[in-house]
Length: 433
Image (cartoon, rainbow, N blue to C red; front, top):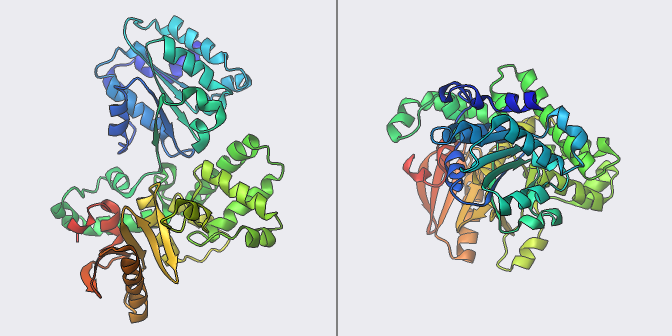
């Protein structure tokens, strides 16, 4: 036990400036650190390999500036030594007691306890709640399942958790990794070629660190397949007791090929020889484990919106390389990338005779790879006009691969924005045109 604890906590022995220096900054760090002043448990959720552990190490490095190193404790429950005890929640107490004995922290001060992949241990919330109520401990937990805090087994922590969702690297983080400046209009202009090259790479391969940090394209594909299959075979299959693991894996590769389209569970079931109800359940598991997300057709009545046909997107553009259909659909790739940038809980689409790809916070978004053809241009703009009249809106955003202009169409203002500017900052992208 002692060797495992020391392996996970090198800051107990080394100096502050000697530890956790190899982790790339994540934008969620500032918010995560702000939550550290509250009593509530901080829960960082997200798919495997998006960088949850790395984010906790960045948090620990920041805490080490002011906190006694021995009062900061990290443990990864996926270590092989802990697997035999995954059905025994009391083993968390054993781990904690071993920490107290080995590190001898100052119990007059707060202890910062980081637990990585906490869902590995059954009924983990019992341990957390007992310490939460009776000890001066700040818990930071990570998990790879969206229902980590929503299911009935976690009701003991209701009202005691601040949740953060971490995704794979966004484009700004990707540019930071490549050390390409973009912080103001001058830097964007100076680095336009480098930004465009980086955008093309990110557009195709997405934001998983292990993928974009590897130069070989065959290896990139293999890594993306490993990520998806690890989530399906190591998380979904055992968690939901799925007997036909091959079928659910094949379903994922099929829906990847049809990302950005409307879901028809019955049709999918007939093509794959699986019951439509089962298809719906499996896609729900993909969502719960951050492989895909679905958005509804917007409706003023919430019940109608919930019942509406959903559109499906993958959570990282890199997964589009895994589809059964190998041809690259640039339009679908662009739409999926815009989705990953918007990716808000209230996101929906508009479909009522005409279509608008996304609608959120009162703003209509259309996506078109290019608008050189008059037919394409008119189709996108007519969608804005139709829904502007229906919803009482006066503005829309049209995201293209590389066109930037401001125009008006039948009384509707439309900002046409290239993908690079949109990804750098979609909420204030008008300043980048």
